[in-house]
Image 1 (cartoon, rainbow, N blue to C red):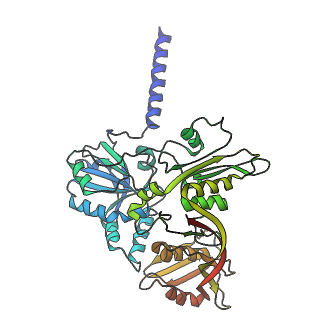
Image 2 (cartoon, one colour):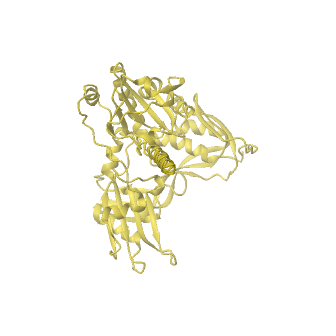
Image 3 (cartoon, helix red, strand yellow):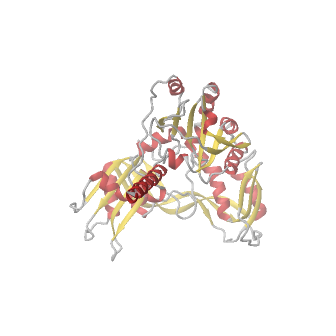
Length: 454
């Protein structure tokens, strides 16, 4: 009898432990679930404090998942602030920043906006008056398991989870939410397919297929990170590529992979993304950075998935097969050609050399654009390139390659006026002159991919 009691107690204990473990590992909230109270770090207009979910009880709440590296999220902030101020007694909009993005990064981002030659006053105002949960490690990947920046989680005043969507905030939906009515939002699709299982999920059992290729629209159900968007299947002996998997890539990115074997998105250096579009340009090949709020719509309409598998003995390579398939579907005649391409080249203007900095392993390089100055401490020429590209080209949607033709390889300190009253190349070169440097507009002959719409 005593042994039986001990056995029952042991089984009950094991069952309790298993249930606790299951709960801990199944924290993803479902629509209608009650949110648990939790503590988090929150930043508002210079004030840093500990916050609790219970602080918001009695008001509706929207978590907006964003990042300082998400232009569409940033572009939507002014409209969200207007809605927050109009309905401040009934709802709070709180931005959730992912793990790794601390409060200093958020401060630096909005400071850089303030010091821009073309400051967006509405975004700066939103940065001052909005609330930011920073360095989050719970909301993104545990409770809401969202993979996309720009996702909104809608929580009612009883702190129950009601909606998860990628739709922009609108006054119509805010009113509907406050009145307890259904929202006109697109249901969020939880990404559940990993890249390694993507083909099997999309075309089923394929071991019987000898040779195939297919092209599909943007696939929002795939859990895909930047490094997983393209993969190559190679013969272990000949190293010949016989299979390709490309997930959610734009047309230029697909052609980049087909011709060069990798997706090159940088405009800096010899691997610059050099694709020339000719014809009527009936599609939006590149994201227009002056329409940032339309990014997700652009993504769904202008990104595609492609896959092919060929026998290792096939005479045509997988890359050539991919090019032929893309040309046929998109009605494009593609080719590589030698073209004279406009570039900005960093050159040494005299024999004056940059003054090297003594290396200190404990000192990290510092790059800052603030108060009308670009300051690089213990950095390199690449740091200069990165800032010039980000500040001068990115915001203007200019696709002009940058090249470094200097021979200097060391670490340097650079302190120049940049980003206050004049962002022109002329003013930049005037400052760089004291370091014996200048960006020169030239033409280089480069092999480029030309896409001709038929």
